[in-house]
Image (cartoon, rainbow, N blue to C red; front, side, top):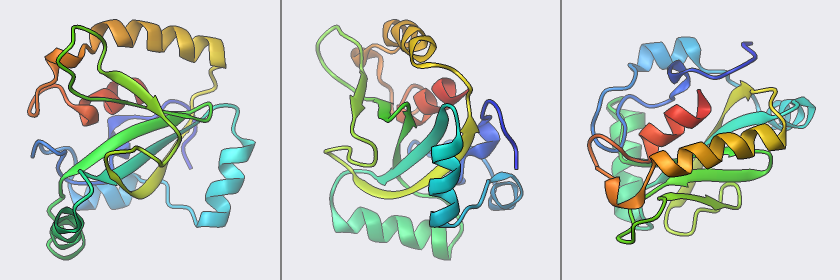
Length: 165
């Protein structure tokens, strides 16, 4: 099992929500840390600062969940997903807003209000304390403004890659 900072190779799906190729299913099978629910909870509790990728079906329509199941589980192509990074008991993600303010937002882990939770992937232990993470988020909030959101180039999946690295 790898420890330390996570890398983009930890992405568990083939395509981000924008259709950008992130990783093949074969790479996913080689690189992901697979844990049973019991082991996942034990590792999460033992880590100094566990980093967890929480994955959601975009929106709250059943049709998206069914599409994702067919695309990922049957055809092995990917799907339409929203992601957030959980660290220090808070989940962080990025989204569009019209106002000239940061698009970085927080929510309770695995409870993003506008998407349907699918699964979590343990990315490793970043080993950073709450103050270091807060400082990092302060910088990221300035770089990830809501109006700059772009479905193809600057979305929640791009944000979670940057933040988890």
